[in-house]
Image 1 (cartoon, rainbow over the protein chains, first blue to last red):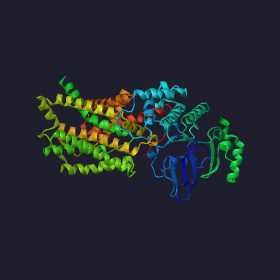
Image 2 (cartoon, rainbow over the protein chains, first blue to last red):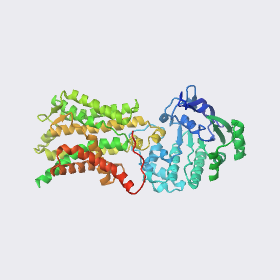
Image 3 (cartoon, chains in turn purple, blue):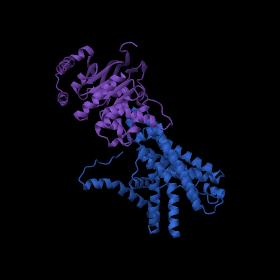
Length: 275
Length: 302
């Protein structure tokens, strides 16, 4: 295999909401992105920059505007629906409630995730072999989940649920992992646990990853490539060597240079205070 | 004493037969979070299909099976309206319920069909065992059938597809993200639910001796009342206990109903009483919070 072979290509990907009305919004504006198989890309940008829309288009929640094209492993997936695209893509959401089913047990949730993107039949979904496997992947989290395998997920804390979401999203080893501000709602301590866990899994399984974040320090600390979005465009794309020497200040300068605007997003600056 | 035994045996038999309606309502309302109103039409559909076939000389067992399949088709229609044409679940159910009224009349050719003089599954089983009393036999018959159906459901809801079906009502977004079409799981669940309801309709028509186009009125409310009673009374955890609790709810509901009628509740007030029961059960959580001074969001409209 070539070093950092291309895994996913986006070309001319745009998304316009409320087309034709006075409130028309161009959430994605002609995006071109080539994601290498070994990339761990962090995506940063203010509210409304198009980060979540980008992940929605990649995971197939809605298709891009006509003319846009998305290929994964060389295959055109542009028109594949969300559940069909799940064969390639796995996602952890900002809200822990979206990644897990509250009225089902930890074991049942994990069993659902085991068949990520595969066809399902009439075999009994849970079994002893799985249970052992689940315990062995949950134990290293240090959250005590391995002992609560038959507890209803609704009785877990937000941090536990998000750690479970992460394990569920990665247990089937998808080609592409999408992390959508997945630690934004967690308290600083669990925030760090889940982030470090994410990095550990990504490195161990060599998963191609795109992580959206609000937090500049997180964007700098994790991954090998940093992109910044603004008004539906990717305005900064910095690779490995350059990225390791960057500081938050450099990012602000890069933003102002690329967008031609003054950096004034308080929410980004404020969020840097918390870790 | 006879009177108590009679009350208990009728409640037991009817509770089990209507238990299939309750299971159907449980699958749509609770498992899929799909408030399906087709039930009021698919119950008489089962009765109409079974009675009409029996009168025209078809084997009652086959007629009952066809009633079950007819119910599956009704559920299929409702779920296709919802998933493929994106019609709101409540409205899709109402549209099918209204359509089924005409369809049921068309099947029967009039507003009711009697099977009193014809062979039914109950009479045939009685003959097979040489028993005259059909009450005891009906109870045994229903117990066996209930155990078989609970066994199948308990297995199905634990399979890979069954698990995805249960997660659909809980968190559809997650299910799609894991690569399962929630359209597919909704179609399977709503069809299965209406199949069970029509099966109950077919059995009740054979037991009472006739099928009537109006026999489905209030079935959903009755099913909901039974589900709620089962959940509150038995506080089930895990899918097996839930299935038993749902049947238990149906039994308790029938028993209450029997007692209320004996105590002089006019049969005409039956539906009103059931509706009141459901209203009270649904309002209790809100009133409790109100008393404790907690906040509750406004009710959903759609």
